[in-house]
Amino acid sequence: MSKGVRAAAIIAVILGAAAAIVLGVFQIRSIDVKGNERYLAEQIRDDLIYDFKTRNTLYFAWKYRSQGPAEDAPYLKSVQAVMLSPTSVRIVVEENPIIGRVQYEGSNVYFDTEGVVQEITDTIYAGIPLVAGIEIEKPQLYQKLVTGNMSTLRTMLNISQLLIKNNLIPDSVTFDANQNMILRLGPVTVQLGQDEYLEEKVANLVSIYPKVEGEAGTLNMEGFTGKNEAITFRADNDQEQTAQTEEGDSPAAPEDGGESGGEQTPQQSPEGDSLAGEGSAEPQDTASAPEGGEEVQEEEPQEEAKEETATPFMVFDSSGTLRYDARVVNGQVVDSYGNPIDGCSVDENGNVVDAYWNVIDPATGQLAQ
Image (cartoon, rainbow, N blue to C red; front, side, top):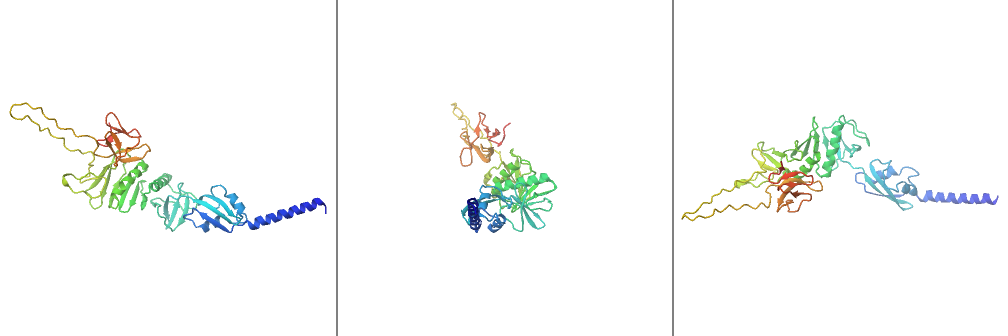
């Protein structure tokens, strides 16, 4: 045997031994899964490690070396692997988010922000709103929901995301035949209307709901646009009583020693009229000259210091957040705690200019003419 052939044989033996070591020693026997919430570590492991190549530690660590999606586990938004030893790896996963659920033939169909079905199960996950009133075709896992009205589907995705974002999860969101949305929050029914000004409606609802929580009744927001319209709350136990608000005003103190109507907010009125903007009668001038012929200069009534507006009103601050407790104190726009509201100022006419250049009369809470 020539020296060249002998050297080639030796190299082949060495490479074979090295390959055997790599293939035999670098085998995944332990996998540590982090970041999973809905899916079991065993399911993720079985979906990602399924053949000779993926069981190899070196190959697996190389395949998922960068954070990214996994074709073999479409329910995962991303996977990233780190080799801990020749026989063990750790993976950090991120599951696809689910924002809502619909029901189909008794099963819960969970969908993500794109309307893609992520899970079909009997399990009910907390913190995920149920959407009703939408007819869907038979759902397919990891396929987009199919419905006869794509506009309603888009609205369903929008309202589901807004509710989760604001941590306000209703018992259900129901669409009627005209695509009006009705929210059920325990005993409170919210008539949200259609999808116009949906972000403003949800932002206002987040502020108002804690004040009517637990009260059986209906909150009507169908016509709300964020432009100082009244929002009414009608209690089920008193059909003649309507509570209203001008942009989330705080309840007014009862006049003439009257009893408060409970913790219903917006403000309450037996006739259903808004109490915001009502003022007290102007002081009467009762000064007169005393007898005795000596002329005395009439004493003018002292003008009340207008350091603070009586009724809170709504403004947008510099971050675009709708603030419902704005008032003017000493020429500055502040919240109910006296903290200045960024992006808001008082102009030369005494009106408030907010971050969106809305000019508001602080005495009425209405847009200035």
